View 1 (cartoon, rainbow, N blue to C red):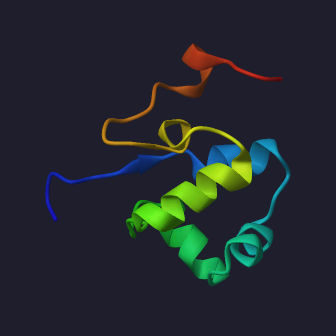
View 2: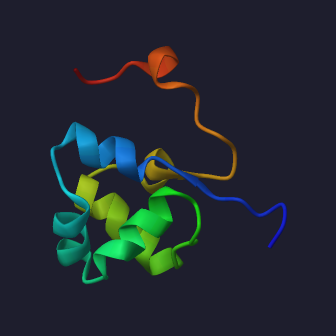
View 3: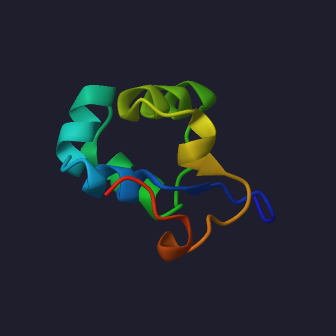
Length: 80
């Protein structure tokens, strides 16, 4: 699995919207620990789950997931 890291912004989106890991897990039909694994990059979601997460946050999937690290938060200040 080396070299196939998938980066994500799940934690950032979750905190921005005031959603707990448990709430997100329930909405997606997964165990809440799965959300923690995803956020830490310890688990790579299926394409289906990745699309469901993007739909939940109402953003394109590439806003949530990337094959390259996301820029630091300060450099892409969005909705505040």
